[in-house]
Image (cartoon, rainbow, N blue to C red; front, side, top):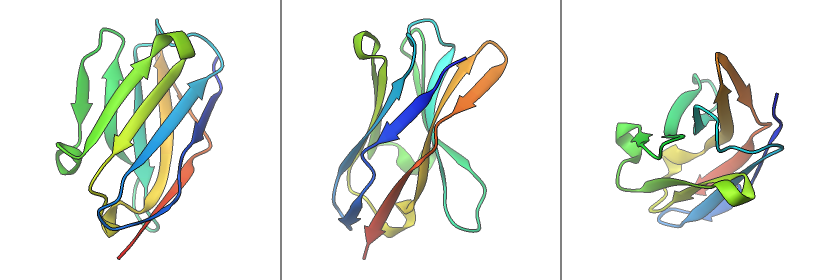
Length: 115
């Protein structure tokens, strides 16, 4: 089991940047993968980016080139650097970790991009 705590959400203007952090309550070194998802009002939760234990990353098409996921195993933390933000990026962003067949979720952090 693991607890995930996100931080870094904020209100920013179009074109701005934010860095989200997700700190786990235990080592992330052996987790299958960790990722960021987001959910906008009235929409389904969608994958933003994920990073595997061996370092491979995967991004949703609309985030490629703008968002970067990274991990610091020593700090048990995964980051999401978001650049060139757009109003359509407004959502609650959730951190996720998969251990075996179980996926764990954080409580979410709000990102709002004003036009």
